[in-house]
Each structure stands twice: as C-alpha cells, then as structure tokens.
Length: 361
Image 1 (cartoon, rainbow, N blue to C red):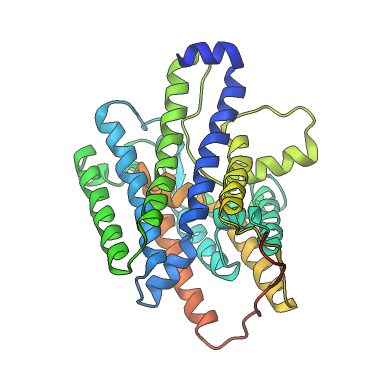
Image 2 (image 1 turned 45 degrees about the vertical axis):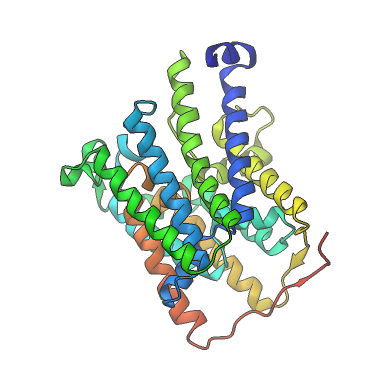
C-alpha cells in the first residue's frame, strides 16, 4: 500500500506529509496536555512533583514503551537511527544539555513549547523561537560552528553498540520495555496523586505516541522506498534551522520529513487552542523580560546543536531508542534547569513582569 502512495505522490512529498501529520498530532496533544520539560524540571527541583512532572513522565514513558514495543513485535528496527548508528559526542551532550537546560528556564520553555505557544498567539515565544532557529543555524554552519565543532571533538563515541546505553549493560529489548514501564508507572502515580484529569493523561500519552508514529512512518517508508530514507522522528533544532534557511535562501525546497514537522506542530497547536478558545496575543511587558527570553533562546540554540537535539529530539525521541548521548543530554537538561531555577528564579533576582496581552479569541 505504501508503495502505491509513493508512486502517486513521490517519496519526498509523502515524507513531508508524514512529518506534517506527525507534527500536527504532537502539536495538538502537547498543547492540550501542557507538555513542557521546563515546567516539569522546575516542579522536580522544588520537590513538588505536581501535574507538570506527571505530564512529562507520561509523554516520555509512552515514547519509550511504544517504540520498544514495536521493536519487540518486529515492526520497527531502530539500529540505523542517527542517534545509534553514527558517531556521537559525549562532550557535546554534557555541555549542550546543561546549556539547553539553563536556556529553557530563562526563556520559560523549550523549543517545542515555544513553537506551541507561538501558535497560540504568544509573541514572546515567537521571537524567542526565531532567535533559537538563527542561533541553531549559526552553530551548525555559521559563525558559531567552529566553537561547536571544537567542543564536539573533545570526547567522541563511535556509532553502534557503544551508543546504546542498555547494550553497554548487556540488556536487550525486554529490559528496555521493563525500564520504560517503570517510568510509565511513575507518571501514572504522579498523575493520580496530583488529581490530573483523565483527558490530560490521555493527551500526554498521545503526545508520546506521536514520537512513536514518527519512528514507524520513516521506518516503513525506508522499507518501501528504493532510495535511501533516513530513520528519524520528532526533533526541533535541525528542522527549525532548515526551515529558516528555506524561507531566506531557497526558492525550490526539497521536501522531507523534517520540513513538515514545524508547520505541522504549529497547525496542530493552533487548532487545539482555537478549539478550546485559548488563542490570545501576548507580548513582552518590560526590557528585563526581553533580555531574559532572548538570552535563553541563544543558549538553547547553541546547546541543542552541541547536544544533537532539543528537549524532544534528544530528551524524548533519542531517549526512546536508548541512545547514550541522548540520556546524557537529558540529564544535563534537568541539571541545568534545576541550577538556573535555584540561582535565578529562587535567589531573589529581578523577574520579568506578567506579559501584556489581548483578550482570548
């Protein structure tokens, strides 16, 4: 069936449509569940363990269990995913993760959250997201690329089994499934303890399922196509930079899965907000807020390209295939977020005032 669709639409167009649909699903359910690593990290660092932590755990666990479940069924093979098959950087993962964690506290959201909020009318998030994309592109191929490459080359790890964190301990798919189930149980326990509504639990699980859908789609496309197809799922740093360059510098884009993600998430989040009457224009209320958000966006942009992914690309997508560097990035994000929250938001430093905004639409 997929072969017939490829013949009808072409591989590139079908791949773009797949990214659009997967991104749309994630955007819709991320908006409904209020999925946000920053909010979860703040709750955790303050010892609260509330609904934001529960939502993140449920999304994270759904991606882990779903991905490894399909691997166990033989419907998915992630061994050729970039996070496992290609050379990675331990130094980039460690430093990039911490930088990203610091940045998302300052910007009050990670890259995916900024995109979701932008679609709801948050102009602060929109500007921060643009700065994130510019910094990511500058780190990849521009002015900041020498610094990124220098840090990346400090400590490298070869692709293959050495990048699979569970394989390092002699564990296989059954152990990965069991480990993911522990996270799922933890998420459900926090959800019940904080009286999280059932609709938010389901939305959080569905957001994680979108990551699984991305893996399944690109894998099935690679099996049906005669041309090489990269196995991948949701991420935001690379696609944001790619879309930025497309808008600025390319009259004839080559469609692909990555180019569908950003507009898909934006559209999905917009539809979710419109359905629940949560569309609202918001802007900066003072200069302090603008400086803080933009600094956070720069830290996230450089950190994401160092780390090889953002809070979703590395922290959920990469972690779902148990890539060593992705788990190091995730740990760095939690550490950087906790320290920044402690030293900035809880240390009595001046905080930006509430943003000015219009009435909800």
